[in-house]
Length: 76
Image (cartoon, rainbow, N blue to C red; front, side, top):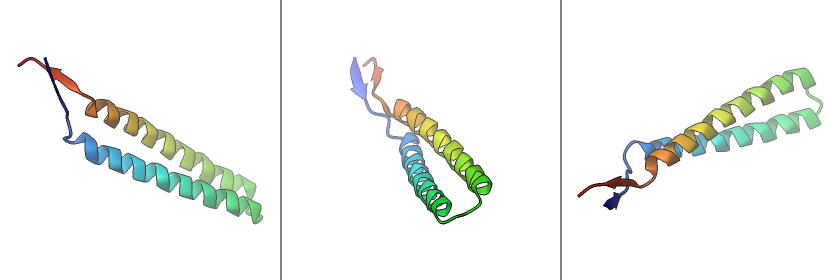
């Protein structure tokens, strides 16, 4: 058995998921700053909820992309 790496379509998925997670973290920081500055808590809570959902989805994509990237054993 020989191990081969699958670097095909999963790699762009990894990069996109990481970018999305970083963007969500940036948004969450901004939303918390908006709360500190006196923004409407109900409005900001909705924004935070959406950013957290987006981040969670991206984290799941990252997990899936990492799984696809793992070593695939082949018979040769």
